[in-house]
Length: 108
Image 1 (cartoon, helix red, strand yellow):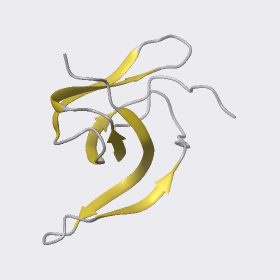
Image 2 (cartoon, helix red, strand yellow):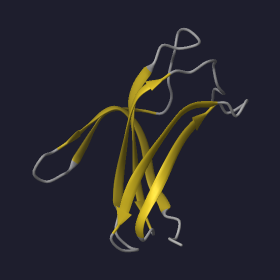
Image 3 (cartoon, helix red, strand yellow):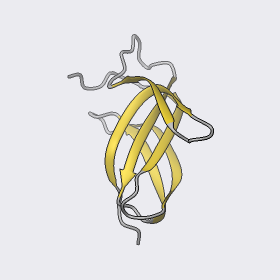
Image 4 (cartoon, rainbow, N blue to C red):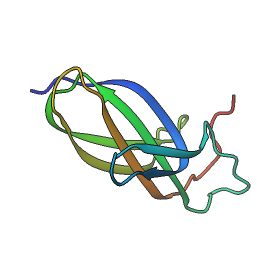
């Protein structure tokens, strides 16, 4: 069984640009919460960027976006990732194209 990776960072942004030759990633318009005018919301487009370490070999990441109070699933996606070693960083991009929020969530 592959070890579970540790999350070094997680960022939400409007879009991510991957430079063709270097594979460097530029995150555009980062944010920490949505401000929405109506519910259920129209489908939202955004990117979830995650930096992981500590995994080994091939694994699956299941992304599940849930309402914090009701535990209702709003969105799911799955990606396969490869960890070449236990100390390297693996960058993961989830491009979320159609995530609707049925009701407001917790505010801080």
